[in-house]
Image 1 (spheres, one colour):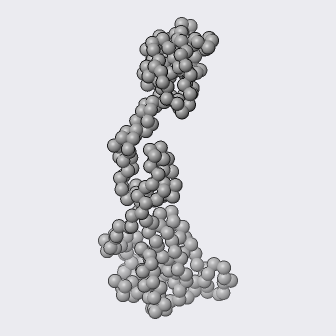
Image 2 (cartoon, rainbow, N blue to C red; image 1 turned 30 degrees about the horizontal axis):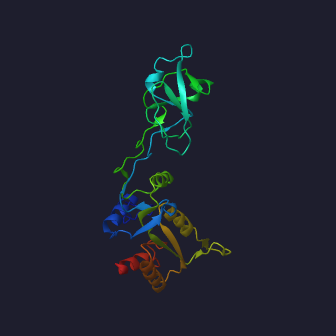
Image 3 (tube, rainbow, N blue to C red; image 1 turned 45 degrees about the vertical axis):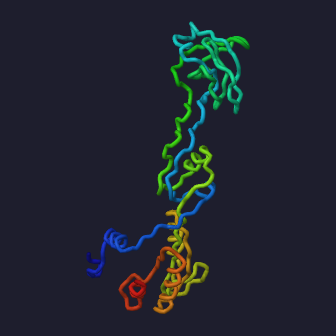
Amino acid sequence: MRDMLGREELISVEKALELLLKSTPFKTPAEINLPIEEAYGMILSRDTISSENLPGFSRSTVDGFAVNSSDTFGATETLPSYLTIKAEILMGQEPDYRIEKGEVAKIATGGMLPGGTDAVVMLEHTQQIDEKMVEILKPVAPGENVIQAGEDAQRGDHILKKGHRLRPQDIGALAGLGITDISVYQKPIVSIVSTGDEIVAVHQQLMPGQVRDINSYTLSGLIFLAGGVPIRKGIFKDTYDVLRDIVAESLRDSDMVLISGGSSVGTKDLTAKVINEMG
C-alpha cells in the first residue's frame, strides 16, 4: 500500500488490527462482585441463572374483573353475561378464596389472580349494575389480559450469559429476581501517553508551531464508552529516555497503553523503538 508520497511500508487499518490482535497477549480481567446498582455497563464474568419464577404469580395487566373465561363466551353489548361480584382483590395481597362459576373478582393492574380464574375483562368492557352484579359486554379468551407466573423467567433459566454487557433493563431484571450482587470483570485501565514537542496542554496559550492536546481527550471518551477506565498520563517530549520511562511506568499500572504521536517515519519519532524494546 502506497501513501501520497509513494512510500510502500504503510498497511491498511484492517491489516494493522489483524496484526495487533494476533500478537497481543490478552489476559482475563480480575473478577469482582458488585451491587447491581454499581454494575451498569460492566461485563458479566459468570452466567446468571434464575432461582425463582418471574413474575412469581399470575397477575392482571389491566383494571377490570378476574373471571373464568368460559363465563364470558358469547357475551355482547346487547346480550351481556351477568356475573356475581364476589370480592375485590387488594394490591400486594394473595386472595384467600376461590372464584366459582358465575362469579368474578374486581382487580387492578398488577393484582394477583385468585384461584378459579384464568382471564381478566377490561373495566371498559363491563357495566357494573350494583355492588353485587356486573355485566360483561365482551368475551375474553383464556389467559387474556394476564401475565402468567414464570412468563418472564422460570426457575433454572439462564437469564444473562457470561460476557454480556449489563444494560439498565438487565439490572431491572436482576432486581426483579432478587439478585442484589453480581460477578463482573474489572474494567480495564488504559493509560494515554501524548508525545510531541509541538503538543501543549489545553489551557496554555499557543505559540507559533504549537497545537493543543486533542487526542488524549478524544481517546479518553472512546475508552469510557468502550467500558474502560482512561488515565491521561500527560504530554511528553520526543526524547527516548523520557518516553521509555513513562511507557514502562504505564505498563506497570494499567492493562493497556495508548501512545498518541510518534507514528511517522521521521528521525525523531521514537515510538516504534520504545515499543520494540518493551517486547
